[in-house]
Image (tube, rainbow, N blue to C red):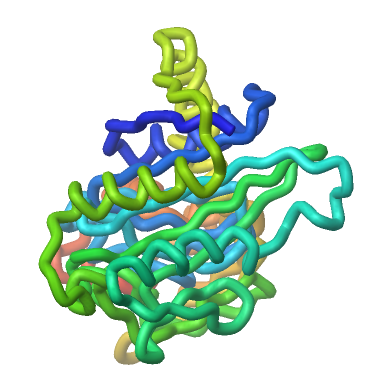
Length: 314
């Protein structure tokens, strides 16, 4: 196993780097990394149904989709992420949440924190969640990753993971809401997140017998940036990969029903909102920027524009 030293905090780079390493490295890999404030949804989730898109837009918090399953997570510099990538000839043994959680739990014991696995993929302390885990299999390799809330802004976390107040009918994977906590609050002796990261790195390196430290080359970084441009930074991936859904909303006497597939509005029914041709909303992505472009074509007041945007969940 090799340890890849990571300093990048760009969430798009960090998520893309995981897929790049999974598919282009042959070694087993350990990575620890942090991202600036961002929201990362699971591969099979509906972005619109998981996130407070008004809040994220107003506060310039990016929302992106990863290749693993599971629920929505909030990242900031008070959260530490760990990634294990391992090869295994027996594919049935690739996904093993308990095995990958074991060294994290053992490490926390050294800090006086008694953690345990709850359900399939969560880690908790005193019944409160501080870590969510997910996995993705590629050929005979598995990507397993998890979060560690150390001193994250829990208030911000609650604000961003709140979807629009609308009825959304779909078959997407739904996040399971849980009471969360920061590990820093459980420590007897205070640590900075850097000290925590350094200690965890040393523990995992010893646990897995890591024999090499690696840093991304210029070639690696360019390949990751290409992956961002072609996939992770695109609306087609982040919005378009959402399962098909129906979105229904009402404000006052006005109502909206849209049917969306691959992120594109295929049918729109807007009632009691003046002389607006609702067919103008078909064939575009159910996304703030696209809806806004259509609305700007009509002579509406600022208040009317905002009401119409709110009907669409923005």
